[in-house]
Each structure stands twice: as structure tokens, then as C-alpha cells.
Length: 238
Image 1 (cartoon, rainbow, N blue to C red):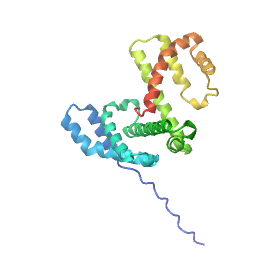
Image 2 (image 1 turned 90 degrees about the vertical axis):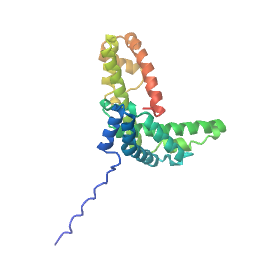
Image 3 (image 1 turned 180 degrees about the horizontal axis):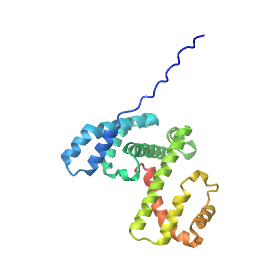
Image 4 (image 1 turned 60 degrees about the horizontal axis):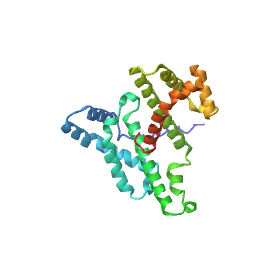
């Protein structure tokens, strides 16, 4: 009995609007001091890629129901241009990943702003959670998992930058040791069994050999840095 021929699996089509060519264009833009060269790179490569990126994210995360979404899309595209120079390939992220994350966070910040304005207009008990549920508290487990993963990845890179800065500027030895312990602790945050203040201090004491008071003194400085990082993340600046 002849078996029917196996059907070939269709390959998923890849998006080619943000390729290595566009990555290189962004690097060249950031490194150039020539306005003429920057303008050429932006018009030919960067602007079309940013335009497609913003549109894709708007539809993927269903930001299309935001008030004045067309104006917001254009505003976001212009804003991306203003932060081109902040992209640092040495931090481990590709330009596509970097600008995708900050674009998504930018729109989430707009959602929160809309939600905040609505709270001011009506009584608290009548406030609808519709926007927050649709755009921020998504029920898509994959998107939640991916967003959490992106947050931890960027946070770990930020902590590594703090450590490098401390080492390059001959910072306090205790602070560098505590930073190394934090990095070790956050390599896999899901494996931490208990997440409360006392437990974290216990973990850090075991990793550093320091007393709680010594750790607390070191953490005071890094709490300020973390709050700044968290604010910029929530506002879509990272």
C-alpha cells in the first residue's frame, strides 16, 4: 500500500524590515560626527525600520485602542530618534531588541497615563480597569514571561555596569563584593525560594560573609540606583 507523500512543513516567514544592515546603520549613526552622513543613514535605513517597528509593536500588543494612537505612533518614532545615541552594543543587546523593549515600555507608560487621567475624572469605585487589563495586565502567559525576562536581563546588565564603575573608580571593596553577591543571587531569580527582606539579607550574608549592618550600608547606595532604573524602565526610557 502506497503511503501518501509527506507534506512539507511551511517555514515561518521572517520579518526583514530590521536586518543587519539596519543594525550597522544605527552604529554608524551613533559614531558619526557628520550631520550629512547622519541624515542620509536616518532617511535611507533607520527611519523606515523604526516606522515598521513601532507599527508592529502597536498591533502586537493591541495598543491600537489607545486614544489618538496615530499621533502617539508618530510621537514615538520621533522619540526613538532622540535616543539613538544611547544605544550601546557593548551591553549585549541587538539594536532590534533594545528599541523593541523601550518602544513597548513607552506605550505602556502612555497606557498608565491614560488610566491615571481616568481615575481623576470619576470616583475611584467606578474606575474601569479595562485599559490596564488589556494592555498592562495581559493574560497572555508568554508575553508576561517574556516581559519579566527582559526586565531581569536589563537589570542584570545595569548591575554589572555599577560593578564595573566601582572597580574602575577604585570603589569600596565591600560594595564591590556585595554587588558580586547580588549578581550571583539574581542569575536565576526564579530559584529563590523566599522573597522577603530577611531572607535576602540571609542569602547575602552567606555569599559575602558580612554582617547584616555591613550589607545594609552597601545596599543604601544601590537602592538609589535601582529606583532610578525602575522609574526609567516604567517610563519606557530603557
